[in-house]
Amino acid sequence: MRFVQRFFGQIAAGLSVLLVLTVILGIGYPAAVWAVSRIGSNSAEGSPLTDANGCVVGSSLVGVDSQVDPGQPDPFFHARVTGSVSDEDAFATGDPAAGLPTNQGPSSEALAAFVEERREVIAERENVDHAAVPVDALTGSGSGIDPDISPAYAQIQIERVATVNGMSKDTVASLVADHTDGRQFGFLGSETVNVAELNLALGLTAPGCGTR
Image (cartoon, rainbow, N blue to C red; front, side, top):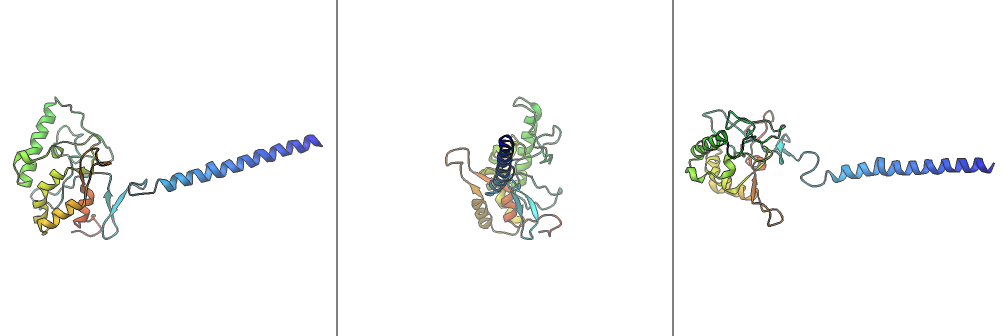
């Protein structure tokens, strides 16, 4: 009888431990991870950006360089080139889902030619001197999907964006200032401007959700 009691007592203790650990590790821990992952703007939901119509127009973490048809008015602030994976087109749009940088090294003649082509095109588009085009406008980021540009690149785009969108330069410059983030922890990296958030602040909307 004592053996049977001890046997069932051990089974009860084991089941109790199993139940407690299941609740803690099978329910509590996953729920805590899920909750923590959704805190803040850079959450596991992908940090979606929504326009005034409630349509998702992109992510604050993914840079997509919006393009217009040749000869059409260009209302957008442009991000860094995202098509750096292409060895044939200096301005290829690329695929944000790929997240691939170029495989061209610093001694690559193809990359050097791309840089000069981009300098020429951007200087003409923004009506500035070639020397005014900043480095980040000419090169892709390590990931190829950097959502940020330098304040210098944003500055040379202000006049075009203001003109095409029928806004004053001061208003657009103020929006740029509002979307300029300081250096990380105050001393790491450089100031950046999030292009996706800036274009959204201009009122540019998602296809199919109403157009500007």
